[in-house]
Amino acid sequence: MQVDLRVPVGLPVPEVADFIARCEDAGLDGVGVHDHPHSGRDVYVTLGLAAARTRHLRLYPATSSPAVRHPLLLASAAHSLEEIAPGRCCLTVAPGFLAVRSIGRPRAKVADMREAVLELRRLLAGETVTFGGTASRLRNVSARPTPVYLLAAGPRMVELAGEVADGALVLVGLHRDAITAARRHLEAGAHRAGRSLDGFRTIFIVPIAIEDTAETARRWAQRWFAPGHPWLSYPSASNLYWLRQCGLDLPEELAPQTISDDLAARVCDAFGLFGPAERCLERLLQAREEAGVEHVFLFPAHTLDGGYDMPRREVEAFARVIRPRLPR
Image (cartoon, rainbow, N blue to C red; front, side, top):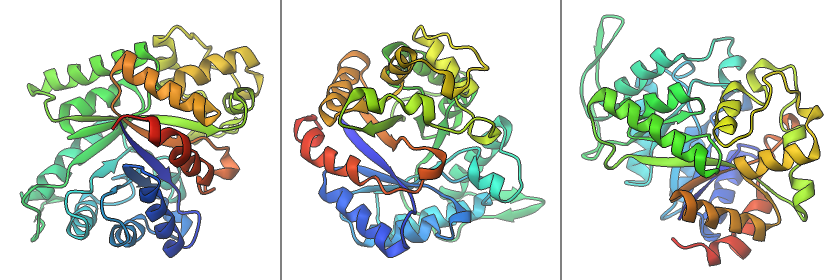
């Protein structure tokens, strides 16, 4: 099983790059760094510096939005990173959350994402793309184009990934029934495009909270995102859709602070890794055995105020407990 980790730009850029190098030493397979221009720290500068300090680690933005960065700029940044770390990079794109809000733009819609992914793949393959009547192409591209992955949280976006992308980061949880449903949506998108998913890589985004007890960790469902913020609502409509696939039919107006301890435990077990490192390892092995999960992206659970905390505890627990017992 391959395991990647989300790392924020929560420190000065050279220190983030050093932290990413320690992730490689801990046995992680990849790192995705969030693209938040309002942080004052650029994700591609950070990834470039990290690439120079690592040898094997997969590196990518987690994630960039074509509503914030023009596709030509994204393609150029992705190819530049590919030249620094050949074969270790991918470009991941999403409609945008905090980044689009910080510049006063709306999130990209499904149609926008379809157009952007197709443009990015063509640009990275050296083809010409027309923007506003102007033909554009990258003068320098790799013989093997940098793959373009789509982050997909809802069923329509999952289908779009199957239709147009090279791979997907899907936020559907770890429950067998939700994963089966997500794969059906990927296949539906591929069928619509008349293509095979051979070579398509699916990475499952997995919230993680390493705590001394499962009871403490499972409070995540009651405190994750503050209510009343439309760009960070929890549970979102997409969250609810996947939870319903595994038998958890939560009301749409459910407020996080009203979730009972029992319901919080069920939500957490369906959606991610919560508790001592040993329990998180068991849950990963279970997902591999029951649902054939082979690649995960660990997303440290956080509150709105703690989103830039470096995931030191997760890295330490991974190196000490999880990696030694997790088949590659």
